[in-house]
Amino acid sequence: MGRIDHRPLSVLPTAHSLFTSGRAKSLPPWFAIASAFPPSQALVRPQKRSGKKSKMFMPLPIAYREDKMREEFFGDHPWELARPRVVLEGDGRNEGWDWSTGVVQAGRPTDGESVIQRWLYLHRGPPKLPKYQAYDIARKEFYRVRHDEDIERRVAHEEALHTGAYFGLGPLEVGEILEDTAYTGWKYWAEQQIARLDRAVQNSYSAVPDEVEGEGVEGEGSVAEEGEGKEKAM
Amino acid sequence: MISRRLILRQGRRALSQPFNTQYRAYTRVQTSTRDNAGLEGENEVDAVKQFFERQSAALAASQPSASPTQSNEVDVKDAEDTGDTANYYHLARHQKKSNTQFGSAQDPFYKPRELITNPPKPEDITLELLLASQSHLGHKTSLWNPANSRYIFGIRDGIHIISLEVTAAFLRRAAKLVSAVTEAGGLVLFVGTRAGQDRCVVKAAELSGGCHLFERWTPGGITNGTHILGQCKTKVVDEHEQELPGYQNQLSQRAALKPDLVVCLNPLENYVLLHECALDNIPTIGIIDTDANPAWVTYPIPANDDSLRCVQVIGGVLGRAGEAGKQRRLAAAKEGYLTYQPKQQLKKPTFADLAQEKLHVEADLPPALPPAPTPASHASSDGEHLVQ
Image 1 (cartoon, one colour):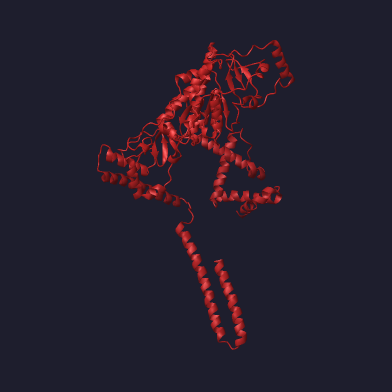
Image 2 (cartoon, chains in turn blue, yellow):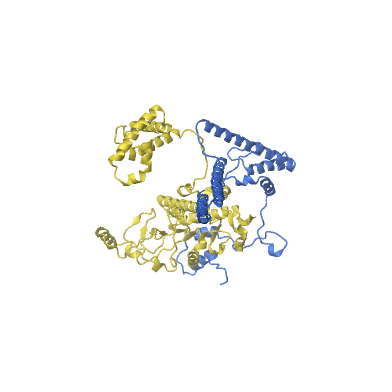
C-alpha cells in the first residue's frame, strides 16, 4: 500500500465484490444510492494556469478592482478602520442596494465600504466618470454623512444636558485636575525648601557655633525627610 | 436619606444577620421620609421609585394570579426582600407585552439557536447561506493539503478560499446519500467531537433516527465491536419502529451493531474512526478543510470545519436529509410495503421466549444478558429493525 489509503474511496467496488463472491449475504443499504451517486474522482489536480511547471497546479490569487480603491480610501482615511463594524451576516442575501442613489443605503451602516461601492458605480457603472472625479463625488457625499452624524450627536448631547443629564468630567477636565494637584504639591514642596534654606542661613549667623552646627545638621535632616515625605505623598 | 445610605453601606453585614429591630427602625424611617420626599418633589429618584411602586401595585391589583403583593402598610421586611422585585418583574413583563406592537421589525437576521432548533433543509442550501456561514474560509496557504486543490477557488489574504459551488454540490450529494440510507433503514452515525459541536450532532441524530458521538471515539468500536459494544442493549422493532418483544435470547447471540454510514464533522481528530470504517467497508462523509486529507473519507464536503456556524449548517442539512428519508420509510410502511430488504436472520419468538421475557420484566430481573447503557442506535433487520 502506498502513502494514500484508497479504501474509503473504493467502498462501492469492494461491497460489490464481497457480495458477488458470497462473503456478504446482502448488499449494504447504501449500495443503490452510492451506485447512482458514486464518490467523485479523488486526488485530481486541475490545471490552474499555464507557464511555469511548478506553479501550474497552484491556486491563483483572488484580486478585485476594488482592492486598489480600498487601499487608496483607507490610506487617506485611516481612522475609518478604527470604527467598529459588524461582520456577521444574516442570511447572506444582500441584494437590493442601489449605488446610483448615493452613498447612503437603507439597511446598512454608511462606512468606508459604501464609499468604495459608490465610487465603483460612478467610475465603472453607467456614469463612466474619470476615476478621481468619481472618488471626489463619493467621498464628499460621505463627508456630508459623517458631518450630519456629528451634528446629530451634538444636538442629542445638548438636549440631554438641557433635560438634566450629567455626563461626568470630560478628559480635559480630568487632566486639569491632575495638573492642578501636581502643581499644588510642587508649590508646597518648594515652600518647604525655601523655609529650610532660610533657616540654614539664619543659623549660620547665630552666636553659638558648636550647638548650632549640631542643631543645623539635625534640622536639615528632619526638614529634608519631611520634604521628601510630602513629595511622595503628592 | 442618610439612613438609606447607612443601610446600603451596612448591607453586606445586614444580609448575613437576622433582620433585627434596629434595621427595621431604619427602614421605617426611610419609608416615611420617602413618602414626604416624593410628595414634596425634593428627591427625583425617590419620586420615580415611588411612581414605579404605585404602577406595580396597580398592576398587581389587576392581576390577582400574580405573586403576592404588598400594600404600603404591609411588613417592610417583605417589601424589601421579595415584593418589589416581583412587582418590578411583572411590571417589566407587562410593559414588554404592551410595547411589542411599536418599533421596527428586523428580519431576517441570524439567530444562532435556530441552526439547532430548526436546521436548514437540503433545499435551503444556497451559496449565500454558505458564504454567510463562512464555509469558504480555508487555512493559511502553507498548511494546505495539495489533494484539495480542486476544491480551492483561490488565495485571498494569505488563506485558501474554498469554492462555494463545490461545497454546495458535494453537500447536496452527501444529503442524498444520508436520505437514501435512512430510507433503506440504515444506521447513520453522526460524529462531531470538537467543543460546541455536540448539540448539532445530537439534533442531526435525533432527526434522522441515527446515533451520535460527541466525545472520544473508543478505538475498536467497529473492528472490535464484540468486546467494546457487545454488552449494549439492543431491541427489535417492526417497520413502524414499534418494539417487538421476545427476541432477547437471539439478540444476545448477534454481533454488535455497526453503522451503515458515518458522518464526521471533524475528520482531523477522528482518524481512527475513519480508518476503522475503511477497514470495515463503511462509507464515510466528512467536512474536509484545506488542511485535511480528502482520501480519509468516501464523500468529502469541502468546507470550513473551524466555523461552528458552518458545521451546524452542514450537520443540520444532513440531519434534515436523514429525517426526510426516515419519513419516507415510515410513510411507505404505513401503506404496507417496505423500502428495504429484510434480513432472514431472526426467527419468530416462541411462546417460551415471550413468557421468559415477560417474567423478567415483571420480576424486574435482568434478562439473559445484562444490558449496559449506551447511546441509542438503529439498524435494519428481518422486516424489523434492531435498535441498540
